[in-house]
Image 1 (tube, rainbow, N blue to C red):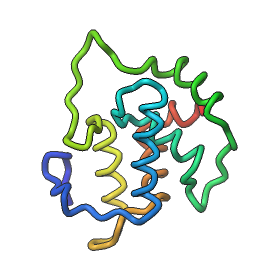
Image 2: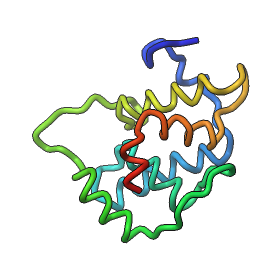
Image 3: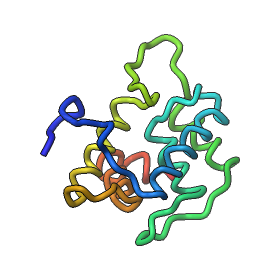
Image 4: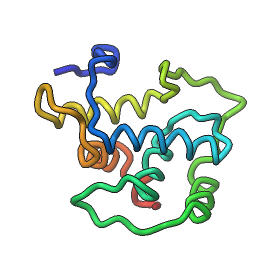
Amino acid sequence: MSETTQDVEWQKLRWDEECYKLKIHAREISKALGHHEIIRTIHLLFAMLLDVRPKHEKLPVVDLQKLQEIAVRVDAGPYEDTAAILSPGQQTPKVKAIYLHAMQRTMPQSPIKIDDLWRALRQLEPCLVEVC
């Protein structure tokens, strides 16, 4: 099992249909918030709260306006005075770590499921999840 995101063959990673939709929706949310379509952990969480929800968790029902208010409080958006290293998929290292953590929860050759991503997000970003 890989310990770092550099050891993962990302092109071989398999996603179930809901995870694939989640990634697309997270990018759309990033764009709507003015974050240049860069997928950050907050965008994954917002996509789960708005659209692609884990099956085994009761999450609050929220709308985009409420999430925009949370985004301003928690995550001001693109940081023009700092640099970020992004993957070719425009994902931050923290998002890659969440993907890695979710991958480690799945059986070999099985696709990553939305519940795997939810558990990884809760474990690696507990403060962010708690705010929402």
